Length: 204
Image (cartoon, rainbow, N blue to C red; front, side, top):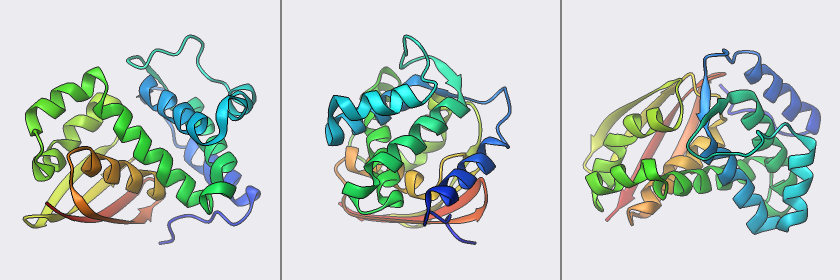
């Protein structure tokens, strides 16, 4: 199945609406992910760019990185940011990927990520093994399953995750970067609208 079709603004809007239509009111994401999107936009586009996407969306007031928020505002903010950054990053998917990298780095340096850092040290395999638990700290929906194919390569299955493949690739890449892995390779494919799988490898 295709990763997603991002050729026109209309395609992107249809993709966003299809994902939002499946969100349940009980599903939430922590504020750190909103903050990571804004930080990426700020770094690449400046404060004016941040103001543009905040003014156009429905950002939570007094955003708290540790609090859980409904999924739809995050998805709209994320898609707006990717649209804004796409021209300078070489396309919509690359913009999503870069936002995903920053999202993981934000988690790793958060109060939630500190426990993960202590447990894994600098071991990429141990970090990957802890990703399902780490995801449960950051969101309250979906599932990750890790399958190993060698000492430094494996496959991750994501189920009921609303963010697109390119963003999730960036999240996995950022996680491996955070523990010093080298020559990181992450490639995902969409298996249904909210399900996907990823082959990843690295060198020490």
